[in-house]
Amino acid sequence: MRASRCLLLFLVLAALIPGVRPAAAAEPAVESAAGDVGDLAAAQATLDELLGPQAGLEEKVICRRVCDYTFPSVTPTAPGYGTTCQQALGLLSTFVSLYASQTCNPDDPCGVATVVTTSCFYNVSLGVYEVRGYGVFSCFDTLC
Image (cartoon, rainbow, N blue to C red):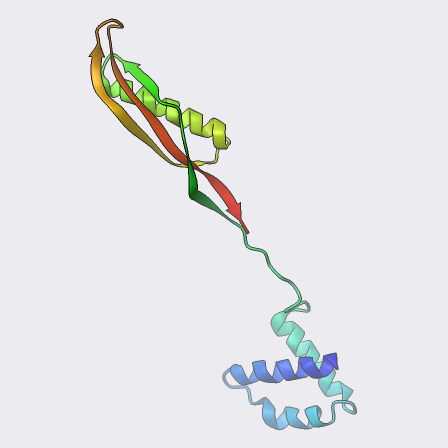
């Protein structure tokens, strides 16, 4: 029974390949499949050559990394300090990035965004510029 299925698959594939005319040569082999083992063996060999010996029997699992935005995470609100507003914002962004890396794994944070909640101002008591905010991020996940 397996040989008949393989031959039938071969005939279908051969019909799809331009320039191949299997009908005249292969029809007698289909009608007398039990009696003509040579044609079946040749068909199986050709099928194995075209598709490989395990064609259709292996299932390939394809996995990929995706940024999972389904449930984004949020960092605690934190300050950023610096001698300039740019430095203060840079420190806040660094905090957000480190927090995301520790939460996800070092190589897995994605979609990291820093949200500023308090504009940059000069903190007189500390003698530095300050900005406050938090971060929103997601983590990479592997989907198969």
